[in-house]
Image (cartoon, rainbow, N blue to C red):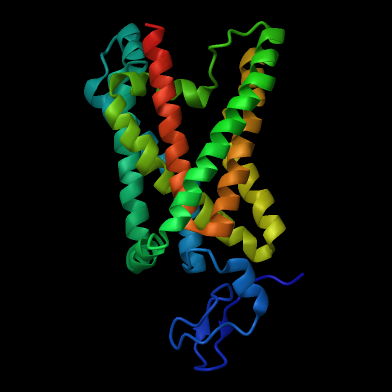
Length: 292
């Protein structure tokens, strides 16, 4: 099976070129392979090393940053007694500090990794129609996930005797932060978070795995993107059921965001991701406030 990992040489200038690049970055001669433009033409063109870097930052780097930030915050602010320690970890103050510092550091790291490719990223937003298409994708994701919740999640919760307000571990960890600072939460979860995740999972993972073929790229990206949003607890059947029933909603989001990036580029997938997250934060905040 043909793959696109090994550099090719431009037939016009003879310089090495990434095999997924639709044209030579030196002399701008088009790729002699018609499959390349058809398959990778809408991708943000970065080197394979940057794709690996973005993926590593999202899969491993962010987790490491969060562990370090958590350790520092607990060392500085956590009370010495166990009850006070547990109360602080569950507090909105800890949640918003932990979330905002971690994601901002990850965003800075992603920006540094982009380096000279910032210009490409900014210029891609000149195609403002792709941003409008992203709004449409956001609307589809919202409708699809709400419909899934009504048709599947709520009935399954009822059958299992689980409170309909129960959230999975990923969402539950965000609620205290949203309540503590809704404005900052909107910025972090609707701008910084989607920026990091789109670079990591669309530019990085999808760009990398699509070198094996577009079908492989879709399957790998969608599955990985869904799995990083769930946290399985094998010793608690109820928590496991909650995670499993929420997994398809992340798969839906993964399918649509990957499709948006593939067909319309980074501006489309980023705007769709950002708007969907903004909607989720606002709805969660309204729900949490009404429950106080």
